[in-house]
Image (cartoon, rainbow, N blue to C red; front, side):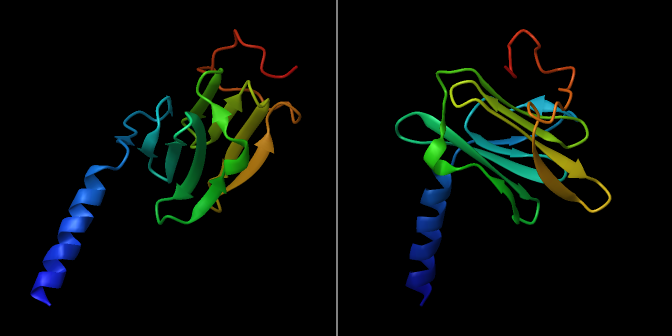
Length: 138
């Protein structure tokens, strides 16, 4: 039994060493530009890069309950313009030029839940830190 525990522990340590980077949010808001895990006070955001270089992302709460999972069959390209941004209200903004996706997860602080919206079609104003030099909503 002792040998079994040592083997399982060794496998766990080796598998943990190959995980993607973990980023802790220090400021109230910020851009997520690289694959990895980003942790804020109320959410965990994971950007996953596939072997072909395409990206996808998911959002969970701090207890790992899934809030939003981007469709893995329509991943976006790292070679095109995209951003993933968490504002100081814990809203999460996503845009990708190659698939023309414009999503915002708006946080309801009273219920501690998120709702998914299309910021282009619903004409939701972008945060000031998101560059306005790109035509997001055509």
